[in-house]
Image 1 (cartoon, helix red, strand yellow):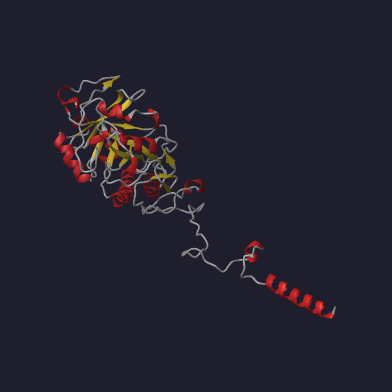
Image 2: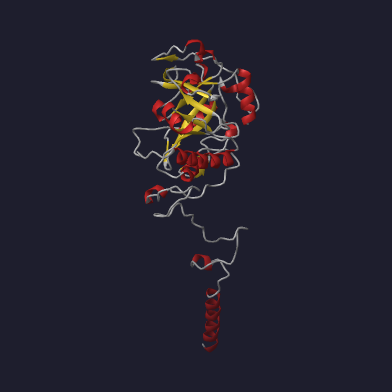
Length: 348
């Protein structure tokens, strides 16, 4: 009886010592931390990025800018580094495209739109709900026609639109410092798939800092070497909530800040889009080193903007075309087909 009791006590001690060990699989079952490392990356705290600080002033490098309201700073943080591969962006966050670029199989008529290859120029077959007789300087005499679009055109059949004569398209991307056109991502992708040369434009909002607006545009428009140069759209808008009209010097200063930021990021000098009244008050004789895109729907640009060289002419806001429901803006490039190809080669 005594030997049996001693043996029982000895065996019980062995069992207890085994249960106290943390080196066996029982430790994992019990929820204790393991000493093993299964990855070469040592886990650590995830840093958080402050998107914006309510109430802080955002400077665009110019003086006299009113302090931004708290809600305006929601997306006014630093601009993320561009992706190595083309990506789309949503609210400042780069995300993969819906389809990998390598798997996109362009259909006709985009088969000739490979990088480094001259794309086919389609002659325009547009109609106009309110045609204008421009006389001997008709836009029809220009070789390369294109369009500009926004959410208001809805779903666009880009392949059909291209065969109707849309060899290029400027697509509404952003305005102010917090608005993204809801159709931009779709239009940006589909226009390229259809073989059009496309670029993005930003509607400038005079009650936001230029730096904020540039950052917002950069967050949402991919840096594509084959894209057209970015556009800053500067004009008076009676429907805008911003009723503030800056002095000429102040307007030019803000534009310069915005354009400098975009040129540094995209490596292309921005195009300035404008209308007659804003041009007269602010831009006549200014920015001679920049390409201009001029709105002139009742007369040739030489009559409305005397002495101004231009790259694009928006000659109609009432265009009609297959592939688009309703009206669409019509434009021409100032030059021949050869001029267009040479200019595009320089942009790439």
